Image 1 (cartoon, helix red, strand yellow):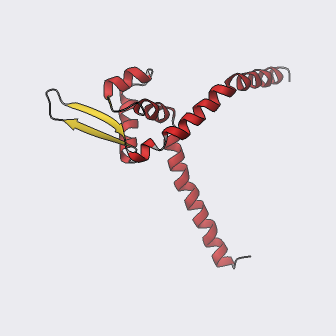
Image 2 (cartoon, rainbow, N blue to C red):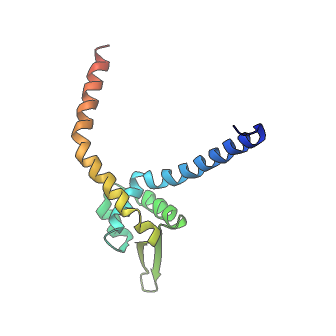
Image 3 (tube, rainbow, N blue to C red):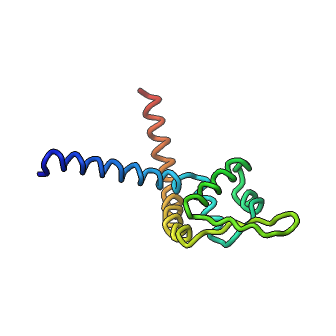
Length: 130
C-alpha cells in the first residue's frame, strides 16, 4: 500500500491519463473521423471527393473534422498553387496506423450487426411489456 501522499498523486496521474486517453478516443471514435480515415486509406483525396464518397456529411462538419484530424497529426492538407487552388488531404503515417484497427472494428460491426439488432428488438419488446 502506498503512503497517502503517493496514493493521492497516483490517482491524480491515473485521472489525468484517463482524461488524455478520452480525448484521443473521442477523436478516433467519432463517426465522421472513422469515415474520413476509411476514405483516405484509399489515398489522397480532394475535399469534394471526400464529401461525395462519405455522403450525409455537411460541408461544415467535414471541414471541422478535417481540421481536427490535421491538428491531431492524423491528416495532412496540401495546397497546390493552381487557379483555383487545389487542396488534397492524406493520412499521415500516424493516421495510416488507424486503418487496420478501424477495419477490424468495421468487420466486427458487420459480423454482429444482425445479432445486435435482434437483441435490441427483444429488449424493446420486453420494455413495452413492463
